[in-house]
Length: 78
Image 1 (cartoon, rainbow, N blue to C red):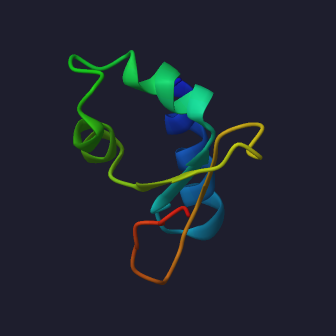
Image 2: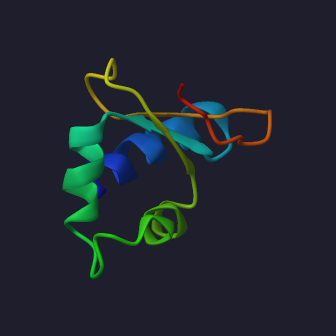
Image 3: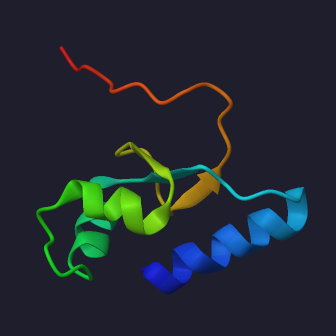
């Protein structure tokens, strides 16, 4: 999973000239990514490792990267 994220991040940077700051993925992707970490329950370790904010959506079929201008805000689900 990390190599895939690195690859799509490099392609994004090559195409646009700057690094992505968001990673879009679903919960299954997130769990797979967390398993590659020393402490899979440390969510901050995931964002620190990636240097990106995470956007989690069940509609996301494959992880993608992007760049958002607006600051990150924690979503609140009702």
